Length: 219
Image 1 (spheres, helix red, strand yellow):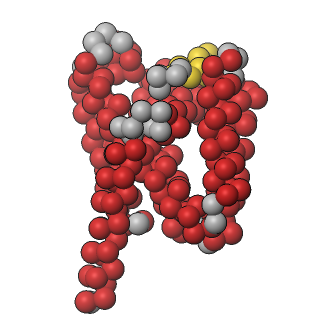
Image 2 (tube, one colour):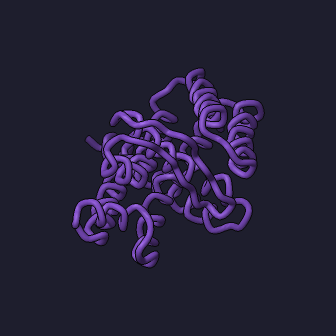
């Protein structure tokens, strides 16, 4: 019983350390760009996956230097597609955070290779403008460097920090929707469902906080 409590307390401490470290990194200009771009990448990828799963097709994904992004799709279920961005990105962050613990040393490298494969696939299938291509190359290069120059132990720490930053970005970016007015996914959902944008923001906040809290036991 004492050992269990000690491990739980240690996990909680490390969780908060990762959270604080990720929060600080997200505030440092230039240094924060790969983390911001990764969060946007998974946000738009979530839209794309939702479009495909609901019978639509994706024409292109566009990323911007300031961390904004767009996913252009045809067909599919519009409500599901619009909802999926702020819901899906933190799930990707959670998976990166979780898999960094449950995988063996060898599979940590496979996780990095998988990230490179996903980025490459989006680059080939849905990238149409130079800026998006450059951002994806930078993201891909970040994972390539992590694979090439970090030993396996540090690679796990890298994924934990990366996953944490994506989950935190999911919460902070949802909060900013309160100030964007008549634009964004929340406004689109309000137009389609007659449910106020604030309700969608609160739903995303609740789910994203729940996802972040669930990551605590995987530290």
